[in-house]
Amino acid sequence: MKRGFTLIELLVVVGIIGILASIILVRLNLAREKAKIVRARAEVKQIRTAVVLLEGDSGEWPGHKTLDDIETGVSNNEMWDLSVQAAGIIATDGNFARWSGPYMNVMPKDPWGNDYFFDTDYDIDPTAGTQWAAVIGSFGPNGDGQNVYDSDDIFEILTAQ
Image 1 (cartoon, rainbow, N blue to C red):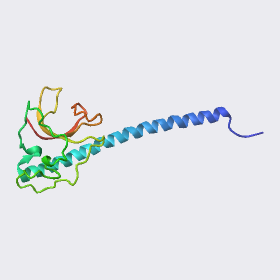
Image 2 (image 1 turned 90 degrees about the horizontal axis):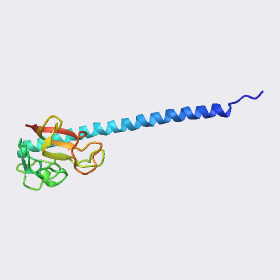
Image 3 (image 1 turned 180 degrees about the horizontal axis):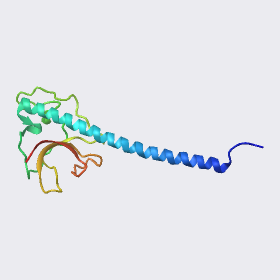
Image 4 (image 1 turned 30 degrees about the vertical axis):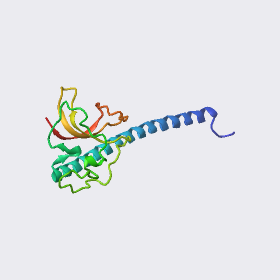
């Protein structure tokens, strides 16, 4: 009498292993995406800390914006690239009084490859009416470099109305 597995038994085992592998891969991708969100939140907090240091030294926000001034209804008040000298975080354009930076060595890209932004008229809760704030942020997982705000944005508030 020969002992062994039938073809059906082998196919069932291979099928079960395939199902388990696909479940693990889905979970792994979800864990990776959550890790990117956590990383973006940490980097936004780090950039916020750098902006607070810039505030303390120069009395200005990135782009030579006035502290605590929420610029509601102003066009083109955003800084889409915080690595530029006018942002004052990693270098200065020479116009920041008492600049003692750099406040960060490099400006990272968010985990999805986009620049972090600074905006002095960001609507922090568009579903509950308009509530303006000055924020440092990322466009989040669906950030496609098009500079479109939506519900998956990751941001830190500097000040709010």
